[in-house]
Structures are given as C-alpha cells and as structure tokens.
Amino acid sequence: MKKAALITGASSGIGAATAIEFSRNGYFIYLMGRNKERLQDVALKCRSGASIVSCDMTDEAALQKRLNEVLNAKIHRVEVLVNNAGIFETHNFTESTDELWKRQMEMNFFVPVRVARAFFPYFKELGGGSIVNVSSTLGLRPTVNTGAYSASKAALINWTQSLALEGGAHNIRVNAVCPGIVDTPIHSFHSLEESAKKQALEKMKPLQPLGRIGTSEDIARTIYFLGSEQSSWTTGAVMAVDGGINLS
Ligand SMILES: NC(=O)c1ccc[n+]([C@@H]2O[C@H](COP(=O)([O-])OP(=O)(O)OC[C@H]3O[C@@H](n4cnc5c(N)ncnc54)[C@H](OP(=O)(O)O)[C@@H]3O)[C@@H](O)[C@H]2O)c1
Image (tube, rainbow, N blue to C red):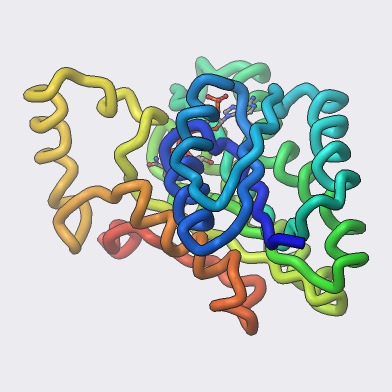
C-alpha cells in the first residue's frame, strides 16, 4: 500500500502548497475542501496521485461520512493528517457577535478536533501516525481586533500538546505550525490590484526581522518536516514559521 496524507483546506494557499510538497515526496494525497474546481487544479499538480474529498467541514455528518470513506477504504496507508483548513475574521470586540465567535471556534478548533478523533483509532491500528495542526503566531501572541481568531488558534496549540501526550504510547505524533503573515486569499490584500498590493506588502515588510512576508511554500516545507518521518522524534512541538515577526 502506498503512503498517503490527508490535507484539509487543500484547495488554496498553504494547504495547496502542502499537498504539492507531500506529493513531491511520494505521498498519495487526499485533498479536502469545499471548492471542487480548485481542488481539481491542485490534484493535477500532485504527481504522486490524489483524490478529492470535498465537503463543508462544519457539516458534522458530511465530514464524518467523507472521513469514513477515506479511512475504511484501506487503499493507501494514510500516515499523515494536516489540519490546515481555517477562517480568519477580524472584529471590534464590543460589536462582535456570538455567531462570529462560534464560527471561528467551530472551523479553527472543533473541526480539527473532530478530524483527529476520526483518525485516532485508524492510526492506533496502523501502529502510528502524524498530525500537524496549522495554528498561527496570533495563537501565541494576539494583536488588536483578532480576539476570536487568536483564541481559536491558542486553543489549537494547547490541545496539540495534550493530544501529543495521549498519542505518544501509540506512536502518534502531534505537532503545530504557527505561520506569520503569509500571502494567501485569507487576507484581503491578496486580491488587491498589483500596485496597491505592492504598497501593502512594502508596509508589512519591516514587521519581520527577515524583511518579507511569507509564501505558502515557506510553511509547506515545515509542515512536511513535522508530518513526515524526518521529524520522527518530535511531538508536542509548536513551531513558528514567521520571518521572526513574533520577536518584533
Ligand atoms: N495566510 C496567513 O497569513 C496565515 C497565518 C497564520 C495561520 N494561517 C492559517 O493557515 C491555514 C490555511 O490558511 P490560508 O492562509 O492558506 O488560507 P486560504 O487560502 O483562505 O485557505 C483556507 C482553506 O480552508 C478551507 N476551508 C475554509 N472553510 C472551510 C469549510 N467550511 N469546509 C472545508 N474547507 C474549508 C478553504 O477551502 P474552500 O475554499 O474550498 O472551502 C481553503 O482551502 C488556516 O488555518 C489559517 O488560519 C494562515
């Protein structure tokens, strides 16, 4: 059986780059997301083979069904789960609604918990596995107007470490990556017209000691390291990949 990885949020940005990185290293990829057309584009770039697993991950029943299809099929050895799908909404605290807080917690925290819970018995039977949770530097140190998102990503970090404790005895490794500012569609500046975007990027440059914002590939390489056997003795790690923004 071929080794495989399931990447959530694989239709765009960091998830798409991560799928391509694992594929370059010989993994069959299960691509999860909602947008089938974009998932198809990514699948074409995955030279080691890929299958599309599309659903709205906040629909609990649909999510469970799709995960069962992958894990019960036993066509490939799914050794890696990358919990990457997420949403980012800023807000003014006094005007923020319960709905916004619930949306952020649901997608950025409860969905990864549910996916990992579906994988745990599978990994135990397999004799091990690796989970990478994509958090954020905002989960380590929040900024103004990001309370709900930052809290959801902080919860993800804490839970990563508790799951690492639980998984150790079963050879299940659980790690987190905390990206800084990365140029993906999650940010409104991503889709600005060229000169406005250039201006926005210039403004953000000095925030990072390394003098630039990140690319999806910068993050994908670290996710690959933590997900693959390259980091076979690493669990419970929380790795910032942020051009040093967390120090500034
Ligand atoms: N970019 C940054 O600066 C940055 C910084 C720190 C952390 N992060 C984290 O990195 C992760 C990836 O973000 P990105 O920057 O690559 O953003 P992105 O390009 O907007 O990608 C987000 C992905 O999540 C998927 N997704 C969102 N809601 C979903 C739902 N209900 N069901 C299924 N899939 C859903 C999207 O798929 P569909 O569109 O197909 O639904 C998309 O593939 C997120 O967890 C984000 O919080 C990003």
